[in-house]
Image (tube, rainbow over all chains, first blue to last red; front, top):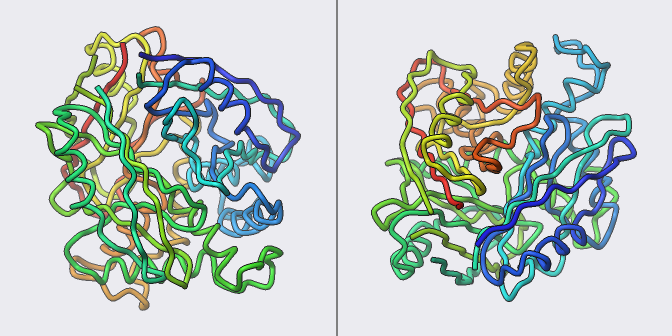
Length: 138
Length: 138
Length: 138
């Protein structure tokens, strides 16, 4: 048994937005009781991550950490076609990951209490992002 | 065909512990000959990683590298509710990843010779950790 | 429905090589129309990543970023059995990831326009690398 859908998100520039409810909706629609849901951002400059859903300072601090690992406008970058955040966004995406896989049990996402699913926009300007949701199971 | 189980691990604080044998046991029980096993830590401050299973210095050095990328007690962090390792553990988890997917062939994990599966505790104190194991295949 | 194959790649030392066409070929052979393809490098010193397929400077700059996060020959490393790139390669692999999962729809890889699949050799010398391709779906 399988189910596939594409979710569209309009981001407001760099930062995270919760996609937990949107994904839970696709899982409910699928009718799959036990299996896996895979999320795939069809882009090379935004990521999908799981982190704490309670204190928003966590996501703010993740921004701080990642901005150090791959700074905007680094003079060492050769690729800067679309501005100082261009290459940084590609590097941030490789570090943070463009896809997630989450177990489904009892027809629901088997997330821990404090886990939320987030789309992390790495470009500084707003973007349209497509996330392919694929569900396999029974 | 699918199989799902939850493994419980008591960690002894920051560091890695092998979970290869525990996961291999679930794969053997499942009866799946060809497919995928997915491991998912239901937490935002520990990770699941694959690295060398021979020289334990590798895991020690990974600790050194990750401690630099997301240091404990960094003054730039806003989130420190549970101490100096709190935010560092969240950042380390995003960098190292809360989930793994490994192929199954011939009824066994298709790991390379030097690959081991590890639960990497990122908090400094001991924790109870739940790992959901989901197997899909035939 | 499932399909499994192992692809062999000879790398020419540190750097990326495209594996998109090779993987697309396995997907076409499988006959799976909707599902997931999982790629798994059976090694602890090379990675599988998705990044921009247009300007090769992006992959060059990723090299620059990763070389900073886990430098060769760092005096803090204890593990250096196989030379100054040995431990760096293990750390780079944990940061960049040994596996990828990509959705399949309409019998094809559902990649975004600018996404390419790359094998990223993290050792400085040429290596033989095995990538297990597992396809689940219908």
